Image 1: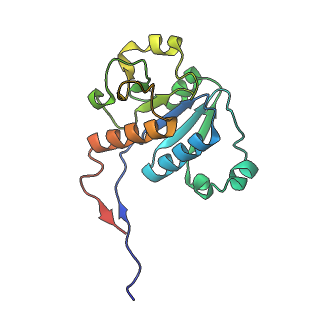
Image 2: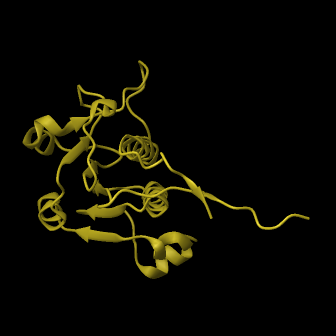
Image 3: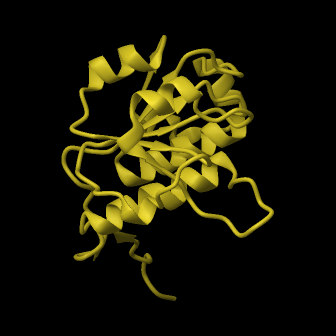
Amino acid sequence: MSGPVSKLRFHPPEPPFHVVLVEPEIPQNTGSIGRLCAATGSLLHLVGRLGFDISEKAVRRAGMDYWRNLSVSTHPDLASCLREIRPPTLFLLSSKADRSYLEAPWVAGAALVFGSESTGLTDAILEAHPGSVFGIPPASGIRSLNLANAASVVLYEALRKMGSFEAPFCE
């Protein structure tokens, strides 16, 4: 019998990325994104009206044991969230984008902003930041990816572009 198996790890960028969910509706998506943030050292921000309860009791009942390892903040609206975190740059992810997330000029500490599952980001938000809108191009006939999948794809690409995986280590 062999000893304990080591786990592959990476060093997240400093400052960390901010993953911002504007009015998320589906608790399973937010739970998956919370786990993603905990696994990548990113900070999770929940903005506006939530479609579920994130109280300690609700989180425990849902079996989200990683939630205690997560830095999560709530904000009444996107403007107050951005005033508080003051990211060096903003990336709005939308199915209405005309530029791919692969073209984004990623920087540490950036805010990755995602809209709700049913409506995405509002036109007002997109129009207020026209140079910051990026999307994940799906094949024809598909509207968009699931929110948790989209956040995973974009965050890991940002980490890759920042060089986070150039010196992985085992612990």
